[in-house]
Length: 168
Image (cartoon, rainbow, N blue to C red; front, side, top):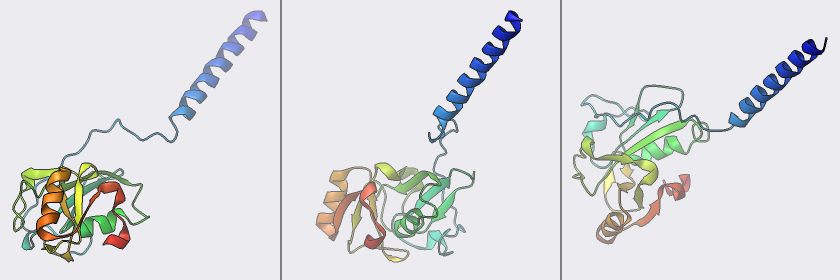
């Protein structure tokens, strides 16, 4: 009888520990899946938001992956990218985000070898330079590059987390 009680107690303690372990993982972001990288923009790629052909327009572009999908979503401008990102329906679903570093890439034809993590980038809002949808956000890997661009073309410099829908 005593052995049966010890066995029951051990089973109860084990199950309780597993339950606590499972609960402690709740709410934590899944970091087990590998980080997906930016991909090359192909000539016929269409913008996920507006459907325009991405390669037909100047200025920085963007790409992102949702946590629940393996396919990349491509955008013809950083403005369209942020319009999607800041939509409350998608804000918590986005995993990786990439934009062109315009300090390393020509405005008229951004090079896909210069994609950077959008969350680490600096943005110039309100410059005279235009993209696919008219006014767009110029993206840079370094704050000083964004400031130099703003000095030449106008606009204000912001980090990723300060970009809002009202700025678009």
